[in-house]
Image (tube, rainbow, N blue to C red; front, side, top):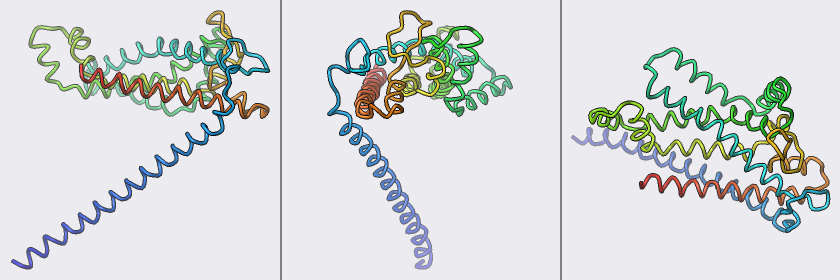
Length: 284
């Protein structure tokens, strides 16, 4: 009996040691992550806040005030237009893959492999494609429409993947109960499945974050004119491109850090608002 007890205690002690080691490694990794994030935020805030001024929020850009307001408005327009194109296509594609396509369909497998491949392509490649196709072939020139079309292709795999996973997380009992009450598939999807899949919102929020922080693709498609566009075919500059131009010139580094502070605040507000909205949807 003593031998059996000793044999059972040794594996248990070994498991406890391994669990303690893994817990320590996780805590160390979390601490490093938080420390790096805090350092980046503090560094940007300390370098940028002293150079924020009212002139930087003027509606008219010039070489004296280096206003970021036109770029901020262009960022909002670019984000709204890109989401208007990508969100319906991405969510509709995910609904087809999960709710309508047969399991084991080869076409579905090709779509998933393609979307995963597209999600790993660098943004500069999207920019070159947008320049060759939208700017040159279609004749849209360097414009906000060319940039939005390019960004919509860039964020499409992300929206599709997150929507697909959100739909898969909805229990089949929801669908079976709806079918049992006589509802059709289309009504079941829009009245039962989609409201029960709040994870779709996370894909849209991540897409907004990628649009706001994108610069490489927009340089080749939207241009860098620091003015408000009068039409969708006018060139414009987003906040990330504005930040890139200021920092690359080397003459306005302080204003670049001030612009980075504004960009950081926008990203934090997006995350905060998305969390509030997700909590409200989950309670509903």
